[in-house]
Amino acid sequence: MIAVTRFFRVAISSVLLGAMASAALGQSDSSSTTPLPNPQVLITTNVGAISVRLFRDKAPLTVENFLAYVDDGFYDGTIFHRVIPNFMIQGGGLTADMVEKPVGDPIVNESKNRLHNVRGTLAMARTSDPDSATAQFFINQRTNLRLDWAPGAEGYTVFGEVIDGMSVVDYISTSPVQAIGPHGNVPIDAIIITKIERKSLL
Image (tube, rainbow, N blue to C red; front, side, top):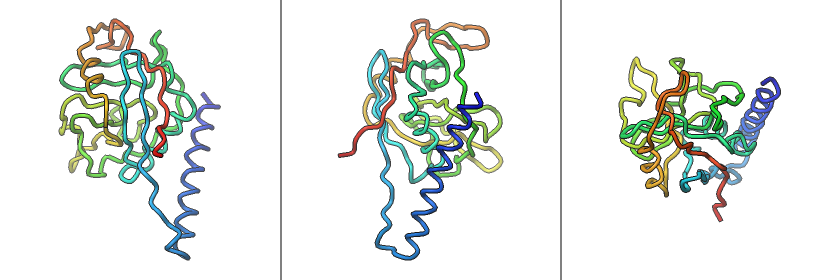
């Protein structure tokens, strides 16, 4: 747990320091600054693949946190462990035998980024503490605007969108489910994330 936490703290710190250095260089030579592209990832599951574009420009901390887990292979072998039809599918934290993987430090909530929890968007899962998100995420299977930030109500940070594979999301959402210990809405037949990897933009 300590080693994992240290890894993600270093990874995120390195990204932020790089961004700060780029900004500093940009102050002396504005022609050298170019906005970072919004990266894409491929979520491969045992029932199909889902292509996702991440909103680095709108949720930079959340995207860099997510990509740190992706690059470390953290999500490989995890499952979509919470599936509610006509709502969302949630995963990225538990293995097929329902063991929760150790995670890094929680991140700051970025739900004020004016992105909405509409059908096909990815958002960070968290507890009642707005700043408690770590690795788990969900894909909105329908539009859930009640999950957005509003005055007096912290929302759930949207940080990406499905650009191909919503049919896979819809299929997963219809999975027969069961309760396992404290976890409800667990697919009876495990929906396994075999890999999440960056896609080349070339």
